[in-house]
Length: 252
Ligand code: SAH
Image 1 (cartoon, rainbow, N blue to C red):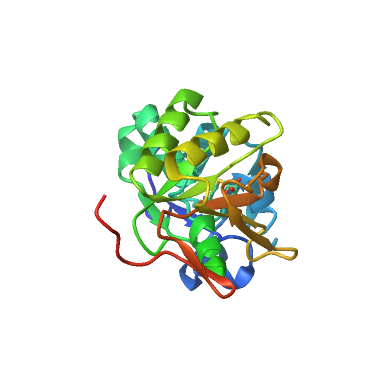
Image 2 (image 1 turned 120 degrees about the horizontal axis):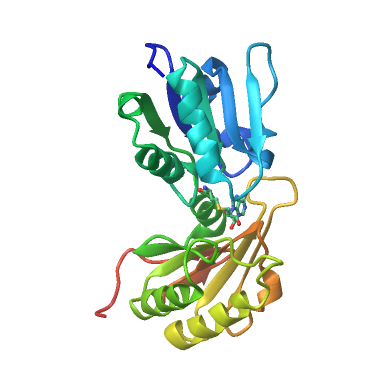
């Protein structure tokens, strides 16, 4: 297969859900693309138009999807790979580079591949809550599809002990209902039960809900796969209806 001058792969973030939060740069790419590749619910967000082919695939086939995008670009297609939020955060950008590495095709290394950022769920949620990520923070994916649960426990404990605020993606799915309860236990030990935790569901979408409680009050049922969970640090506090983390920290 030979590369043509016009083919490209642009890996774009669609933001948390509200169309007004898709960047102008990403909107432009979506009008130029000949093909859109992605997970079914994200591809559904792209309006159909003549000259555009939508390729929606199921979850957990990220590498096949990425390889397909590279193959099409190599034949001259303009391919938008879509993720929700930011494509670099637990999403397709890494999958495309992994597919590129695995394919080991020298022609593909010269393809025009670009990553265009989007607003990630954690930061969209933070903005609605106030400023819980105003100091140092860690973003952790609680799914054990691609890493062992023991590593997730270790990272939760150490991030909590180090005083990071935290944002949790994929917090609780039907296939692993007990793990989030265990995560809360670890956090209570590592951070203390008075630490604030916010559950932000369907951020920027109809029916958005934001609930802030203490770790002692939190229960596993407060989270599902449409929720991003934000845990503050020891200094995170309420001011009126808002929750914020000061920009300074006491000695660790
Ligand atoms: N690339 C995406 C994250 C994909 S992982 C991003 O940058 O946002 C999918 C997880 O993201 C979900 O399980 C949920 O934890 C979170 N998420 C995505 N959109 C969300 C939204 N609108 N509201 C709350 N959480 C969301």
